[in-house]
Amino acid sequence: MASGITGAASSTGSSGTTKTSQQELAGNFTQFLTLLTTQLKNQNPLDPMDTNQFTQQLVQYAGVEQQLKSNDRLDSILSNAKSSSAASATGFIGQQITANGTTTALKDGAASWTLTPARAAKQATMTISDAKGNVVATQTKALTAEAQSFTWDGRTSSGFTAPNGTYAIKVDAVDATGAKIKVDTKVSGTVDSVDLSGSEPVLLVGKSRVPVSTVQDIGAGLST
Image (cartoon, rainbow, N blue to C red; front, side, top):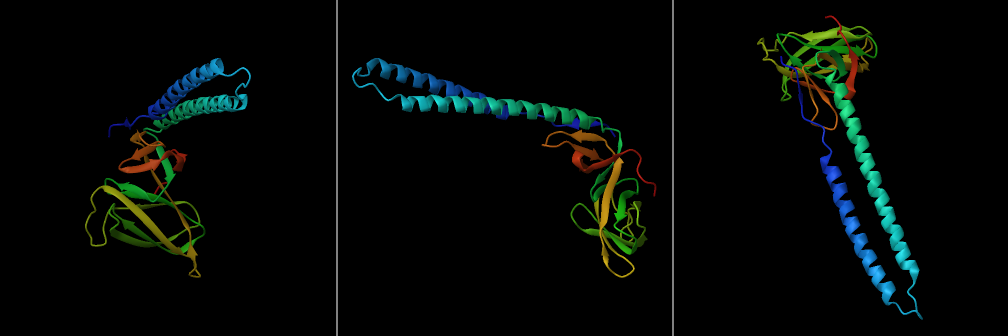
């Protein structure tokens, strides 16, 4: 499968808004100075105008200008951070990763998840659903108190072979006393491409979408 990058980081909208605000502020400030100069020239020397009001306006203009500059610097920092994150994300292409999640791709008769129960489970029921939420298969087995790989061969409960695509797993487990056990679920696979169109880079593993922030390990997954 061809590797690639989707989307591009962009901050032109916010920077354009800042530039427009700066232009408006400059125009208003120039108009304010013109009016102030005219008032000072035509004021009555015996009854000079109160300077407190226009001094306060000058302070307000200065404050707004500083805020706009701060916003501009923040936009620049965020843009640089996003570019750096995007550059780092492209390094995942071709790598085997393991990430938190319940959704993975069925390909060539196999869909795998890494299951880690809080403690040994006497019985765990794995329910597999398709992209539309329809249950297609269920399996029951015991789980040891450690990370282990569970692979579904694509066979549905009705005996048919499910088509390649994205499938999700739900695990309901109980211990020897019948108490429910929490089971941590991770997905593994090779990163084919990276989607940079959103606020966070997303790795594409087959048809599965894995946010970079959910990646736990880089390297070979657990054997079946």
